[in-house]
Amino acid sequence: MANEYFVRMGDGERISMTKEQIIADLQEGSADAADLGDIPELSGDELDKLADIIMDSNRIVSVEPGMEIPVTHDIGSIRIDGDQGNSGVGIPASRLVGCMMHERGFGADTMELGHIDYSFKPVKPVIAQECQTMESCQQNMTVPLLYGAMPNLGLYYTPDGPFENPGDLMKAFKINEARESIEHAGDHATRDITWIMQHLQKVGCDGVNFDTIGAAGDGDVYASLYAMKALREEFPNIYIEAGMAGECTLGMHGELEFEGNVLAGLWPHEQVPLAEEAGANMFGPVCNTNTSKSSAWNLARSVTFTKAAVEASNIPCHVDMGMGVGGIPMFETPPIDAVTRASKAMVEIAGVDGI
Amino acid sequence: MCFFYSSTIELFKEVVTTTKEELYKELSDAIVSCKKDQVLAAVEKARGELEAPDIIENGLAAGMNEVGTLFERGKLFLPHVMMAAEAMQAGVDELKDDMPESSNKAASVIVNGTVEGDVHDIGKAIVSTMLQTSGFEVYDIGRDAPVADFIAKIKETNANMVGISALMTTTLPGQKEVIEALEEEGLRDKVKVMVGGAPATNAWANKIGADCYAENATEAVNKAKELLL
Ligand code: B12
Image (cartoon, rainbow over the protein chains, first blue to last red):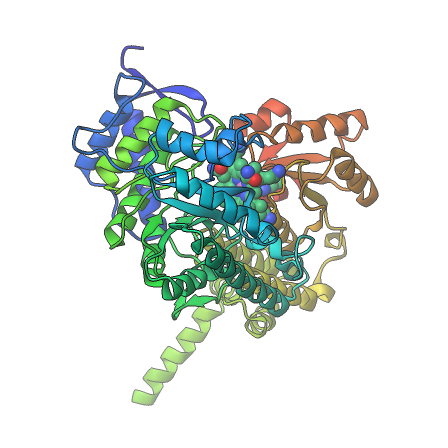
């Protein structure tokens, strides 16, 4: 098997492929992104470079000197203390300790404080605790410390919230009612996120990370963009990170707009200008991993989408890299060979500003 | 002469639009337009020319497939899918009396749910909606559903198929548990099993003894049709 290379499937399984098979998958993956997003495919040189990265004989690869990039961090310190299938390692540590570990032990260039539920809505009743923890973290840390959570519009629908579930309404053909429910939820989420950040700003918080924008579809994007706009107006210096949930904005409503732009069906390169307009300082594009395809196919597809987003953006793009996104397999502890290859490709081919 | 010439063209056009393929396309386009009036008009026009099952299968259902594809590509959105489905239903109702007796068989019943411990239900709900809009009788038992709930609903509705969703690698084994419970209850031979959700794969479906895996809602509809119709 001298001319076969170890690669991964999208679910992390180890397989071997020939160079020709790898190149065919790279071409196919890039073409798939180009077709869906109506964006350019990777060039022949770029595909060759991607093939070299994938076929590198080393288990771990890295960027060329001078190409180092900053790493921002999401999901708060849940990576340390979380134990719910979210790649947390279940070490009981305070959030201050968790944040400081990321700053001083793991080399995170920005960090964020997050709540165990990691959605904005449940932060409201514990805002005093969040403010106090933010303050003590700020007093002990140097890197920019943001507050991070998911807009998670799902929490505003029954059974978790006041508005009827648009999915159920839709199934009963109550399309207008479903749309109204999404609009109400969106407005509530905008109001809640703004309120939460107003409090955190008072204790010296450096900014906010909107994590997994669009998880509940276009309503989620609507809520997030208007919250960003309100925060930017009120706090001209607040640092705003906008990280997406998926590659395409799901059209649950279909007609919601931000400043005249329809939000449903947007791909990363179409999402970033809106985040920028809303006042974000940084954008986190996402591309989903297909578990039934090889890492070559997935990575070429992710790099194609991400490159187009980077080119369309005037703000730094820190691509979302983790289990099941950015060409990385969908696996709780993503294999390091795949993670480092995908990261190198994002920096050297997609041209991302950070991860 | 001139008049004669143009009316010949009109005549020619008329002949062309009433060919079978053109009628299929008109029906299908009407569904993609998501407009009930347009669908009913197309059905009315096709009625004299085509058999009712042909209108439904090659015209309306083909349009619905197209809607599914456009949805997966981010070109049409959930409300459009629902409007198209509603329009399709109106078209099918219109044709009810023209249907041969034998085709009035009961719709296949599918129970859909997300396994216990997993609260992700957006994708599964879309799958339920698309199955429903394709004519299946769907019972969606929601998310975080214990194995016992799957079994109870399957028994209650006399289901022919169960769709099991899991969105996390940690909850994926829940799909296997439902299959094992079906075996224990002696229901496995009666109920087809379809699995899905981002971490599931064909290989996984084979490993746990499911009947099929589908990557997205459109594929789920096609696989369900293959297995049930
Ligand atoms: C939205 C979302 C949420 C929402 C869910 C809201 C809701 N009501 O569903 C919220 C915020 C609640 C959430 C919570 C959590 N989440 Co989450 N979530 C996502 C996210 C961003 C998108 C999922 C989604 O809806 N996609 C859109 C739909 C349309 O696609 P889909 O679900 O894949 O469905 C399609 C196909 O898979 C298929 N399909 C789906 N079901 C079925 C069923 C059948 C029968 C068939 C045939 C086909 C089929 O068809 C669908 C349509 O095409 C994903 C990441 C991602 N980008 O995928 C993470 C993700 C799934 N979540 C993840 C995690 C870890 C969590 C949490 C544990 C986080 C936490 N610490 O609290 C909790 C889960 C708690 C629990 N016990 O379940 C991880 C899972 C990792 C893993 N171990 O596998 C992911 C991958 C994110 C990540 N990379 O970390 N999440």
